[in-house]
Length: 335
Image (cartoon, rainbow, N blue to C red; front, side):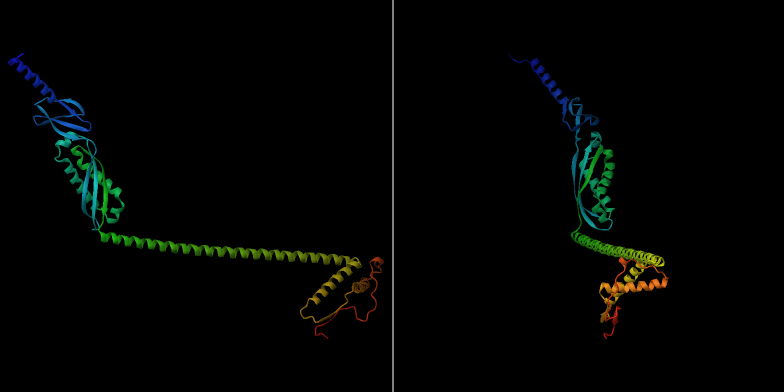
């Protein structure tokens, strides 16, 4: 069947309609926003998914990526507050919140954010000393984030993070810092050693003090106990003497004999242990000692005027005559 003119017109119209439909249907991928311009003027923003526009009257103006993006900041020289030159580089993370503002408020968005970040890095780091710069990166990051985020807010941009990657001081400055750190550590070690010696001396002195106190307390306690023992001994001696005196006053000859025998024995022991003794002659027989005590008891009875005699069982027999006297003879010159 031959194609006539009307058929061609119909086919052309169908093809045109199909082309118009395809031109009016726009698919926006996830993570992007498309701006629509009508005769060059912004009208609306297309969201992800299937969208319709008016062909030949409207067109896509800008395709904005609204995902968080990374911007690498190149290395740059920074002069610190104390006139030290350092090299620093950073990385910035930003996200487009308003596609229309990001598309029409600034030209070349990434370059604008990059230059703005570099400028603020020099400003923030230049207001700090080198030591503060090297030890307070978190403070630098926070200040940079606030400053850059405030600057890009009119562009519909949100700066999420600004991180300083590396700070490199000059080599000679690094060597000087190493020597300073070594000196500080040596100083700290000497201080700690001195403190240790001081504490050791203090502890040693405290120990000696406690030892002296304990020794003095021990000597005082020993002296107190010795004095108490002497006091008890004196009391016992006084009590014994009093009892013997009472017995003598009551006419008890045995008490006199006991008292005299005790003193006689003590005198013998003293004579025997004397360092200057040469020759000692004394009666060592028990019968002689008892006889002597008996004679002394007789003298005591005569003194007290009592006629009472001790029981025969308690009286020792008189000692046999001896050629030597019953009394101890002591000659210190050895004659």
